[in-house]
Length: 204
Ligand SMILES: Nc1ncnc2c1ncn2[C@@H]1O[C@H](COP(=O)(O)OP(=O)(O)O)[C@@H](O)[C@H]1O
Ligand SMILES: [Mg+2]
Image 1 (cartoon, helix red, strand yellow):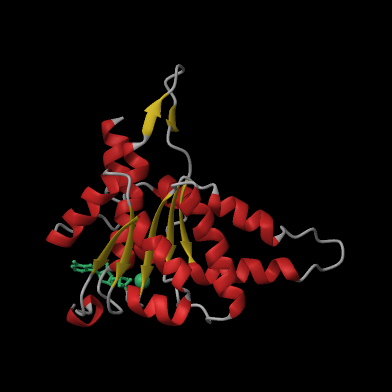
Image 2: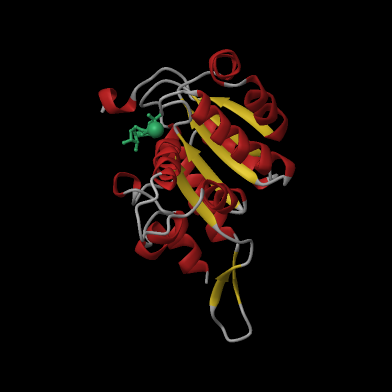
């Protein structure tokens, strides 16, 4: 059990990558110790949500993936038959842009193909126990995307569902140019962490 948890938290479990929806580029990544990471882990363990903001390449997605793996690993338990199961429910990595593509696809109802409805998609991600919404604001910002993100985040806010959001937008920019209702809910749900300006992709 300890080894299964460790493997998942260290990004070494292929099964967990598939279950959690971790993209290939972030498979194998684990928490890189730092003051910021420590603050984020503390908030996560307290059940708080997080808004990770900062420049492109500052490590937002990497940290979010590490937190997702760690949350999922911590929640694994053994049932009566000795099988491992996620006692706290589902956890998922969801790029904001993919969510918008899924929603758009739900509008094209090709004959004979029964697409999932917009409501079903939002229901699914609202009821996921732990959700990483990656790169909020990277999708084309429109009235449509504002509505979808608001529907999802307002639902998660009302259900007190733990959510990690990453975004290049500062919380002030989110408030001004995206949606002030979303920004206000995020602030109440948890902690805003600024990952700074350094681009690890360039530095490496
Ligand atoms: N603290 C760190 N030290 C070294 N490399 C890091 C650190 N944080 C992130 N990285 C790496 O830098 C790259 C960019 O990180 P990423 O999380 O994709 O940035 P962002 O989501 O903020 O654009 C990735 O390859 C990631 O693994
Ligand atoms: Mg990113």
